[in-house]
Image (cartoon, rainbow, N blue to C red):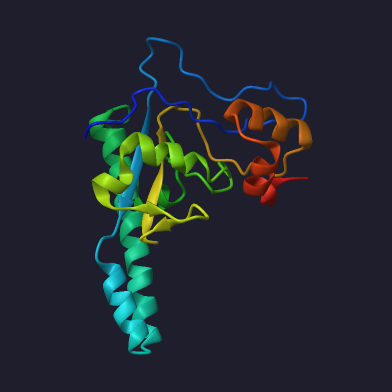
Length: 199
């Protein structure tokens, strides 16, 4: 797959608990720390969903939606396991049970823009541009930055062994201003996209 732009900056907020160092994780040069990207979709579900909707068959419509969502999520997890054990190979000997996988006891994380650890949906735009997502697999972003088809996943693979998920919680004005400046976006526009996490 050819990337449109091999140098793209992604932004996020730091986990800033009171009285703790104001720094998350970094991989020193030469240590093999890796960050990757994922995008997965279920192609073909939409026509069945639309047909069931036209037939007023709510049960089968919802069933197809749920199955498509679950298949996409399962495939994203399967890819994450292959990244850990084979492609990047930083956990070659991982032998976790399904219960341990569900509890996310593996090393590394798979965060996604728009979720509690990464609440900024606008990062999807850069991810889509970098990976030519619409051209390569047909996922499109709506005006509200939802993905279409809805049974789609995009995000990052982060291999750092100490990485873990955290809910960002609320941010204050100085964090918002700093973030808007780093992203070169207006404060009004950032407030619009980050309204759910503003204090």
